[in-house]
Length: 456
Image 1: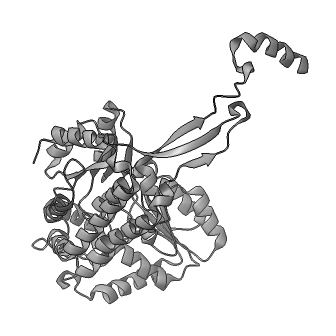
Image 2: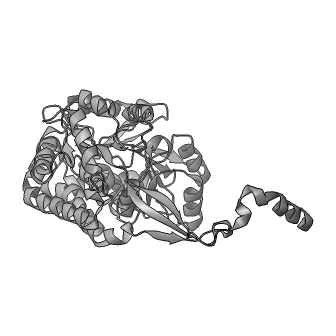
């Protein structure tokens, strides 16, 4: 492996050859990436099984398949996105034509997390390639099997002076951030996100931060409670709760709380049986530190269902808590595990106020049949994105921007939003040499000023 500084230097040199700018070049590289994913999909699934105990179906639907779908979507639309746009010119620019060119940044850095190690590495990489950049990819060291397969795949199809995977611990990430990149795309926690932004500021490097937060789920008294319970627990239990847009806590109308708790328990039993820890398809926590951190939350309320753990397999049962205080530890940080606190509200205004007292989350979910409640929540709550009467599925859309706001991040990705993230708009005014409007020049300003004052 060449030194980090050398890799970046070679990428900058290669970018300046202009080869990455051509449409055909970008399309070929996307096709190569698509082909190698198909080739290694069994190995990718095995790596995800080793790192997180994900089933093949969950691995394909939430990681492999979504990336392949993204590549297909981007390939079909890339030529259109690359077109130069002509925009209106002002009277002062007459006669002239104003154009906007889509221009890649150059050499970009992508730092990905461990919870969806394949998807959250490849999705931004697709955007970076489509936009015409070179890229350095840093997979998480906490999912080593996935990092290894990602590195093997990229080394097989791309030279390091174009796309390079750099694996290693947090020290490697710090060394990468000390280098001068043209753009940084980071997915992970807010603590490290602040460090990334501080490092980027030294070089005035633009950044995208895909973070997280405590994503609320509001259930009012008009909601279809059985459907709400099933969709909430489905979204919560994906990857054993280790999902940045998983419902982090539920705010349910006090009149609907009892029914919701009953239906949540039924949904868990229907999905995973009465002994989820024995289910082969139930994912594990990524490591011991994370296992014990999430397990500690079990004491922060009354356990409605679940509550069992297995330190040997690092598995925690899907657990619903009630009688939880806003001051409890489980409500002070993103849970990132299969523990779901349930709190109550009396009016929709009270629920909105509770959400607004917290930092802006990455996602918000609302279950209601009341249009006024829907409008009130969407108008007055600030969050990255979300769903009405569902959870998580807004994430899989190629046409919706995925990203946070405030504490939950900045920037957007997926589909054209990824292409735009890794591109910048270059503004050009093109004018003919003649006619040359004389009044623009200083020697004519006194005369022009007299005329202007006469008309005022």
